[in-house]
Every structure is written in structure tokens, then in C-alpha cells.
Image (tube, rainbow over the protein chains, first blue to last red):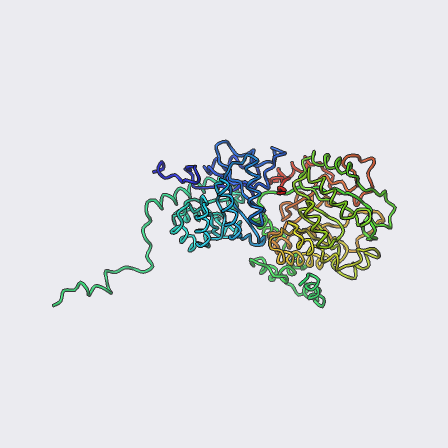
Length: 260
Length: 369
């Protein structure tokens, strides 16, 4: 099953369905967290990539073989996001990009419209684009049409650790969107990551919940196992939960009664 | 509506009786609130709030970790000029003082930039005194043009400007603006600024709004603590920051909490702001504005700074030289603005941050154009 169950993003096949953010961790913890998480993709903000000083550069702490997904943190519109993506590619960070356009610093709401615009431009330029959005089916369809490699809806506001508050909308995206759906932001505990995977989400991206745990390395391992368990449960086919008890046909039983 | 109008709403407010009446249970009730209103913030700043510092600290730390992670941003100031036409009673740069006055030439700016960049800094706060004749906007543009080559993020802390002038400086490479109202109490402001353009309270008060309209990515404000009742001053600082966040949702808002330092002229702050008071201000600000950057400069002593980074502070300066030209050629430098209390080297500060379990971050922005 493991062999068949790879997640395809762009031209890569991933065994791990846990993506990890780096922005809130000390660099020294990155190798341990990445190893324990089993992740194959980490996101790094270009604004933090410090090419002048390797010792302070998070990129120098990411092991070989891990795919780097630069993100456009700090971008306030499509134009800035596009610019950041190009600078990242020019700095040898590869051609993956997580588009993050924030025009609300208080709640860190992504700007869906600008994100669509940036996706359209960057896909044409050959980037593997993973846009971070508020879960909105109409927007997700437009992103899919524009050629996004995945859509990354939030579960709850970034850094809030509040879990899958947008559950009902995520379900709809899982149902309707053909490219991978990756829950990015809001997941606060492994059980919530497992729940997302059970719902049929293709992967989850976790940063704050790992970075702010008492022992980030151990928490990374916990998330890895939760994501795997959730995925297996999804593949196994969860037994349906019922809202009401189901006695044998009390309402339609009469249809089967033999006329006397 | 400008912040000036919002400030007016509190003109008749009886702060003393509000604080007198505030009880511990009201402070604790605020702890349970997700989004705080101005009066909740005022409650945290009360004497009763001061009795609940440990609980407040636990919440502030959790909020800071969630929003900023285990990171501390580092920056350093570069003083371009200490020429000043104002007479602020608390400042060494005051035109009333005899001070070696200096303005850096293009060549000197380059030398300072090289010396600072060599220490690892990538976020530079560029400062001048207020003198439109010695350091006009065109001079600042020229300076930014040079400094852009060395630093991916540039902040300005200069005299208040018009929207159009701020726009010119944004185009020249300024990413953020720091401007302190110094004191929100208008009478105290009037007394402390006896002459010069800084006497215009409202032009200064509304400067961050103009800078926001001009496209600055980030705005940082603050009151110089010790000039007036600190509870009130901290309240207006927080209110001002919340106002700016509302008016410019895309802009990152920062707050500083400078205390008056020894200065030429020997001005003694009329109000004592103890370490404990400073901690209460920082914690209350963090709970009221969970996303705001909070800066602490080298005005504070090492031991206190070491503790503050765990309580809500997100940005600290290091290896600060407040004398004009003091980085490259200290012997030829102009007079200092204040005497830093934390003289540790960048390496020492980095070590302290790492030992606390945090990442020192030198680069948090990448110039796009």
C-alpha cells in the first residue's frame, strides 16, 4: 500500500504527507525536526533566507534531498508575490513556491483574489505553485484551472492552533478539487492532523504546533504518526457514523408487509 | 478619522478612578478574552494588573510564541546626523546643547555601512536629528540609495514628513518608519518641546498615518517612558498602534518602549518607570496586540533584556552606537544621543539569544526592487 500511496505534486512523488514550516523554529532544531517528521518538503520564507551568513540561514540547516518550497511571506499583492518567487528561483531555491499573500496583519487572512492572480502568472513561468487560501470552492476551482499544483486551504487562522474550524468547507474542497488539497495553518495537535487525513485531505502543513511544543522534535514525530494513521484510516474506508439509531425499517417496513 | 480624533474621545476620561476601581477579578476576566477592547487593555495597565504579572507573563509568552515563534529579530541604528533645530528638554541632540555636530558624507555613510554589515546586521534603522536644512529629504534619499546596497531592510527614524515626502523615501528604499510621539499628554508635550518645529503636536501624531498612506511596509511607534504617567502613556501607545492596524491592515505594526536615558543637560525624568512597570507595559501590550512587534533597545541593561525576550519582545537592537560616524571612526565621531546601557557585542547577544532557546534573526525582509 505504501508504495502505491504516493502523493504527486508537480513532478515529485512524496511518501510523507506531512509538510513542515520553518519560520518559528531555531535553526539548530531544524535537522532534528525534519528527521523526526519524516517530511520531504519544507517551506522557508525568502524574507528569512540569509545568503550572507550561512550560520543564520535556515536553508543551511535543511538536509540534502528535502524539497524546499520557498514561500512569499511578506507579499501584500500578486506583484510582490511574483517578484519574491522569481528572486527565490534566482537564488537556487528550486521552482516550487508557496504563495502567501497577506493583506491583513491582525488575523493573517490570505488574500484569495491576489493569490489567484499570482498563481496564473507563476504557473505560466514554470513554477510548481501551491497557493495558501481561505477555503473557498470558487477560488479553489480558479486555482485549479490556472494550473496550481495543489491548493492549501487554512484549517484556522495561522498560528492559532485551533484545529479544523473550516472543516465543512474543507470537505467540499476534498470532494470537488482534483489537485491535492493540503491543509495549511491552524492544525494545533496531532489528532487534528489525523482528522484532516481521515477526511481525505491529501496532506497537511504544520509549523506553529511543532515549533511551539515543549519538545519540537518529539512533537514532529507525533505528527508524522498521526498523519500516517489518518491516511490509513481514510484508505481503509471509515465506517460511517450515524446521527440516529437505525432500527429495522420502522417507517418503510409496511412496504414489505404481506397483504392479508 | 485621524488618530487625533480618536485621542479626543478620551479627553474627559477619568483614568485615576477607573484604575482605582479595577479589581483583580476584572484583570483575570480580561485574561480569558480572545480579542481585547481598549478598556480591557486599560484594565491590564491598572495597579491591580500589576499584581497579576506572573499570570499575564504566562499568557504573553504563549501568545508571542504562537505569533512569532522562537525567534528574535536583531537590528542596529545608524545615526546620519545630530544636527537639530528642536529643543527637546530630554535629548542630547537639542539645539540648546553644545555638542559636536556632524553629518555624514556619502563616503562616510559607505564606511559606516561596511562596518555595520561586517557585524552581520541586515536590518538598519537610519536616524537623524531634525534639520530640514542640514538633512533635507534629498539627503535622506541619497543616504538610502547607498545603504540599499548593504542592507535588505531599511528603517527610518527622522523628523515627521508629508505623505509625498514619505512616498519619495519609500521609493528610495525605506521599508519601515519609526516615529515616537515621545509623550501623548499634550501639556507635557508642550512643556518638553519649548521651541522648534517639533512643537507641533498634531503634525507628529499623524505622521505614522501619512507614512502608512505613502506605502511603508511597517510602522513603529512609542512613547518615551518617564516623561509622564506611564500607565496613560502606555495606554495611548497601544491605542495608537491598534488604530494604525485598523487603518492599514496590510502594514506590520510595531511598538517600542524606550525609557529616558542619561543625556546631556542632565534632564531627569519626572516619572519613575521601574523594571516592574516596564514589564507590565510589555505584557499588557502583548495581550492587547498579539501580532504587534515589540522592540527593546540598548537603552535597557543586559540582564533585563535577557529576560524580556521571553515575555513578548520580538525585536532588539544590538551593538548600538549613538554617535554620528562612531562605527568606522569613533575618534572623529559627533556627539551621542544617549548612552547605551547594553554594550555587548553582536556575538554576545547572539549567544544569549541562542542560549535562551531562540533563533537570532538578522534578515526578515528581502528587498524586492
